[in-house]
Amino acid sequence: MPNNPDLETVLLGPVLADRDCGACTACCTVLTVDTPDLKKPAGTPCEKLTAHGCSIHAVRPPICRTWFCAWRRVAAMPEEARPDRSGLLVSVNFVREPRNPLEAVSLNVRAMRDQAGIDPALTQRVLDSLCDGLVAVWYSDGSRKMLLHPDNDVAQLVLSGNPSPPHLEQEVAAWRQRYGAFLDQA
Ligand code: SF4
Ligand code: SF4
Image 1 (cartoon, rainbow, N blue to C red):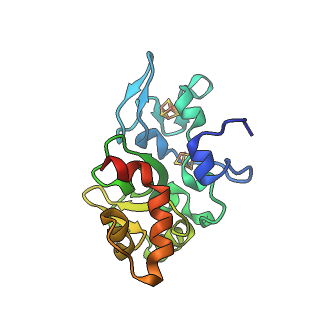
Image 2: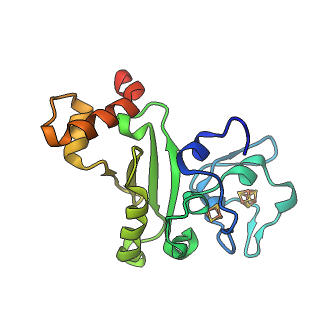
């Protein structure tokens, strides 16, 4: 492991040796690519993507070599949650000027197809594997983005700074400490 791991490695752990992308090419649509030779906005299929995968694989841009979704890093995520199979792509999200401080650094569970094509039981297992730490988890389906973790009552207290009931005091304090830099900017 490098001496100074990137924030994704800090939050999610290193890329797992026993998981590979296989036929998944979800990040070839999701990622922003901005190099002198190739540019594409997030959410648009890359012009180099073919039915057989990347047509410039050997010389693909650095972002394509180094970016990995959460499924490639989080062993607790179900094996069948690979994005092309599940329709769910989970990634670390950074928002420079967040409207909600809990959005500044978070995990985003993104529905890549219509909700009817996504297994709710698998979605729940994915969320169960992610919603256990001090990293906010959001779910977006293209039209809406919802905060799923922490719970709404905890989130309200974290954001407002209002006194917490005794049973939530420790949890709220931990979240406020973790997101303190972003709360201060709000
Ligand atoms: S979305 Fe994840 S599994 Fe799919 S190609 Fe990208 S890194 Fe690999
Ligand atoms: S260059 Fe290749 S790996 Fe990178 S986004 Fe385009 S198709 Fe995917």
